[in-house]
Amino acid sequence: MLSELAAVPAVFRFPLGLIGAVIAVGVMDQLMARTTDGTTPPSVAASVLTGRPVDDAPLRLASVVHYLAEVGTGLLFVYLSMVVEWVVGGSTLSTISAPRCCCTCSW
Image 1 (cartoon, rainbow, N blue to C red):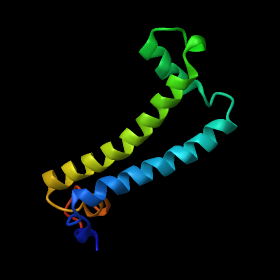
Image 2 (image 1 turned 90 degrees about the horizontal axis):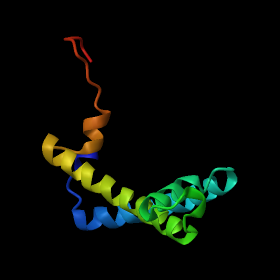
Image 3 (image 1 turned 135 degrees about the vertical axis):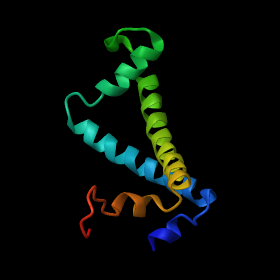
């Protein structure tokens, strides 16, 4: 089954990565809302982009940067997994999950 994953075209993988990223954003929003420093990472990103102190960073920009970073991460994950498959010549999951041994034992 794992070797069949490599045959799935990119046309289907990227939308799946996008859906996974949107789900991850929803989960992260719930988790970040429960912590006291939950808005700090997006605020730091907005601060860096605007050159303002973290306390003066625009909250709307912080939210937009946060959501775009999450969605971009999902798509980047799909792209990098396809690159690994191309370099290794097989399914990424089978490549990662296959046990490896540095000696000549019977693994």
